[in-house]
Image (tube, rainbow, N blue to C red):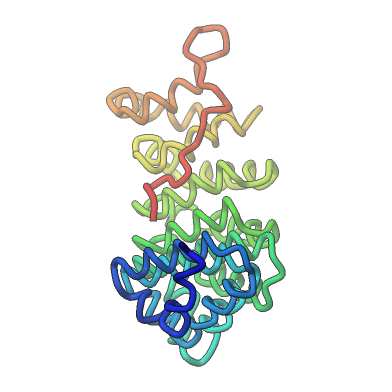
Length: 281
């Protein structure tokens, strides 16, 4: 059945992509068609329309499907348009800030890590360059979290450095806290320690993070990561906020990490972290 639909899709992909039912039909075709050349031909019909698709509640799903189904051509097409003249200045950041575009950028991040996408790393550099603003954005923060979890190692490390330098600002922001937490969970061990120490340097920040829904993960992992004098300093800082932490659902989770092993309340260092700290894009 899918093969019989291919002729009617040819030349009409963009029109169908903007329709609630049509976008589902096109996505199904990408999944059902085994011939990679036919899939690539369908994806090529999206050329010149990516900026519109970023803002369309239906077409964005078709672009996402093209990225993951036609590799690396799908991702290549989208990256070229985002970085090209047809997009507003700072195309990657603009897309990351959009409620639909952020999903497209997340799919690109996944593909750039595993496929040879020309200019893919240039797109990621642009995102990291705007990381401070994106981390505090209602949709951009999802992209930063996704980069920390799924991006290439070099870009993840650069992003962690930005978070470390701006720990106070991000740790005090409702969306930024989620990015700090994601960094604490997925960074390399050395970067985890450096970020945890950055949190300690900011008076009151660790306790504030510990009491919030999206920040307590960062506080918990910071306590688990630190040792020796750094861990004692974390204990000291949290002890100043003891009544507030005990009264907080999230604060109690962090306090449990300070209970010595064998007391029955120790926090598990391997607690599963949510895929997206703030929810999902």
